[in-house]
Image (cartoon, rainbow, N blue to C red; front, side, top):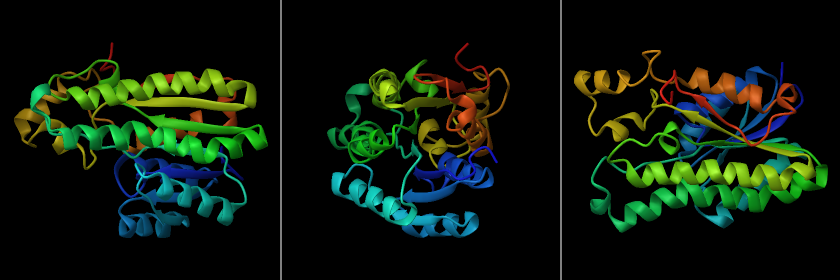
Length: 246
């Protein structure tokens, strides 16, 4: 029960890594806001873990503020924020990515971190405590060709994590990131372009441990970094990647 008595918001928690993190947090004793644009999916996960479902568009400031307000109204305080919601564009040459796709990727993967910070950092400061976890990617460390602007958005997220960590440390707020390799999530097909045994084998050949990241892998790492056991850890981008970035 590493998170016993803690409260948490997990964005993008209706599926994939977010679902795994929400499930792990609940198993560790936390009360969880299951936040997602997919409200029906969020409700399903919330029922599973006895959490609270909230529909949110993480790229929209008023929607993010409403999510924060609901969390505070429901729990009285928030201890943990996980910025997990993320999207990608299809694999293609960097100059062929549409402006709309570029804007959408940066809004969901980067602007969202600013928006959640704007809504929740003042609360964390008032309590002189808090843990923020940004779900970045190995793509931000070792970019894959043709996922250009997605790579860049995750590199931004890693730098933002370090910038937030050094600024917020005197306020008792820790900020870390996780860098998963591609996993069995709804985004996997988008990363690969198409899901075939041959393309899967090509991806897996780049991962020394020989498998994709799982929601359970992410849940375990997230639980540790957001727990008091990691009270001296801030500003790290932990690779949960089976050796992909070695």
